[in-house]
Image (cartoon, rainbow, N blue to C red; front, side, top):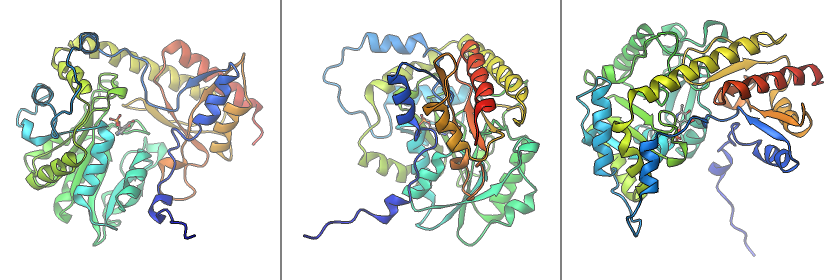
Length: 400
Ligand SMILES: Cc1ncc(COP(=O)(O)O)c(C=O)c1O
């Protein structure tokens, strides 16, 4: 009997470092161990009550499909959101609602790349870009950045050196997951100049737009969109902004008509994003500014607690993150993946442990990130303090 082979492309899709240790965490929990989750950006902050009310009052039956581009009410709310943050030129026709920002990443790569084309990324980068690059047969070309400079961009020539005849786009994440870097206006100008000179798309993932600390200013790619309408694509998401990770809603925004018409055809193929999710999210215009002011303050104090706590651990190195809610941390271990697994399988402090993500999967260059982890500061200060204490004690005990 002839047995069918699965595709070799499937083998190229990596496991996510954020989730691959979950079975070890589940097994620890089954034994009654409390696990502090610093491995994933799934905030413990409450979703705005106006959105939860939609769930409580849901009457529409049956729960049918939505529109492929997105539900009209939701699209209008998004148009108003972009106008509120200073980009009134964005109209609903420029927005494609996606099933999470994750789908927007995949659509953008598919929209701009032929099989085998290259996209420049700054390393370390959001690990799931690796997944979607593999799914779309796109090659990510990493440009290294350095922890000692807060992972800011290297010299322009170092970026341009990576451009080949196959390069189609530069993909940035600003503020950055996993580094917390917020690119300056000057850095953005450099990227724009490169994109213009070499005729590249510039794709900016800004799902953490509001999470910028210490009074720093975020320079959105939207500031450049009207000037280069054919080249700019924004990737966005409601997951973090409104603590709506489970609602699975994101957006792809562009003034490039070919891109928008094409991604709509992909969207038609997958029918629609969640109807109930969009009904909840359409309430975003009713979320008070005080909601953001509160969470912004909260994340900044979490960032401060984490930075101070980790800095005090011998052999640990990190830069103060400027935005988002992540940081890359170098640990005094040889193999951070082994350490992360050991925390779940072997280490306990008062029957508690912590889950963090090994950082190698946030790199495309083999061998990098092997002694680093990515930490998400998505827990309240009390839990975060406990988690730091656990890490500190674990590093003393760990023999690896
Ligand atoms: C940088 C970045 N982009 C996109 C996403 C996708 O988020 P979602 O699919 O929940 O919108 C995430 C999630 O963590 C992220 O960190």
